[in-house]
Length: 120
Length: 106
Image 1 (cartoon, rainbow over the protein chains, first blue to last red):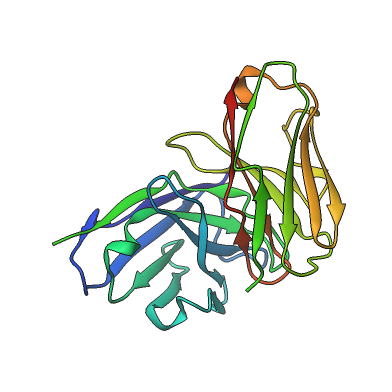
Image 2: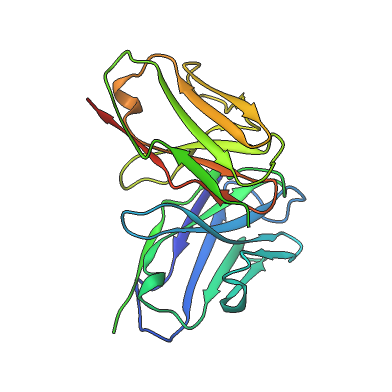
C-alpha cells in the first residue's frame, strides 16, 4: 500500500519561497508508472492542481503558476518536492501530494495534506 | 485551461435518496473524467475514473456516465457515509477540478 506524507514549514512570510517535500513509502518512486503531483486547497475552497513530475524528472506545471513553481525529484530518498516563490496570502492553503500513473490518470494515492499559512 | 463547472453547488438530500451531480467541461475531454469524494479534514478519495469505471473498493451505488463535455455522478441510494463534498476532475489536458458539490443532510 503506497503512503505519501507531506512535510515542511507551516508558516511562510509574504514574498518568500514555500518549500514542501513529499516522502513516498510502500513503493518506489523510480517506477515508470510513477508521477507525483501537488494539489492545494485554500481554506473552505476547492482543489487546484499545481504541477506534477515524472520519476525521470519531466515536469508539468499549471500555466498560471508556472513562473513561480519548481517541482523536483530525489529518487535516492524516494521523495519529490515543491517550491513556490514570491508567496502572498492567496497561497495560504492545505497542500497535498498525490500519485498518478500517467498523463491520462487521476490521482489515486494522496498524502494527508499540510496547511501552509502565508503571513508576516 | 479547461474549465469544469459542477451543479448544484449544494444539494440537500435524505438517506435513501437518488442523487445526481452534473459536471460540464468547457471543451471536449473525451472520457477523461474522474470523481472524488472529500470529507472535512481529509484528502480527496477517487471514486470513479474514466467517466464510469469504479475504483476498487467503492460501493456499487456510485456510478458515472457521460462523454465529451457533460458528465454525471449518481448515487443510487444515499447512505449516511455519503454526506461529503464531491469534485469532478478532467485529465484530458493537465488536471482541473470542478468547484465541488456539497451533499448535506436534508
